[in-house]
Image 1 (cartoon, rainbow, N blue to C red):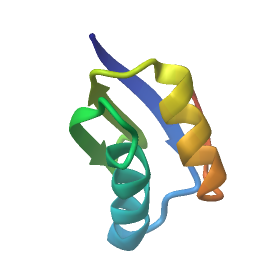
Image 2 (cartoon, helix red, strand yellow):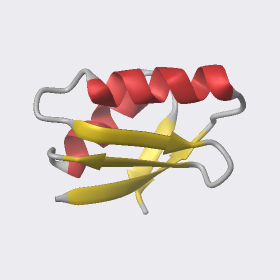
Image 3 (tube, rainbow, N blue to C red):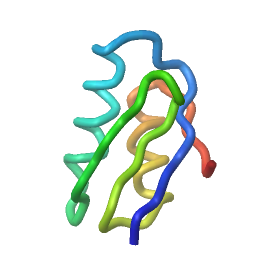
Length: 65
């Protein structure tokens, strides 16, 4: 299952790196991509709520797109 979530608060490529690492560290997550311009993260293999929680724990605001 491929899911895209909205991520607010990213301002640079370092933010993108932190969000991507937070999601990629979740068991089962695969094909993680984060786009600064659109403010989205796309992930395959996990429940979107887990990805949202991981991103929120990093200090960004994530929600379903």
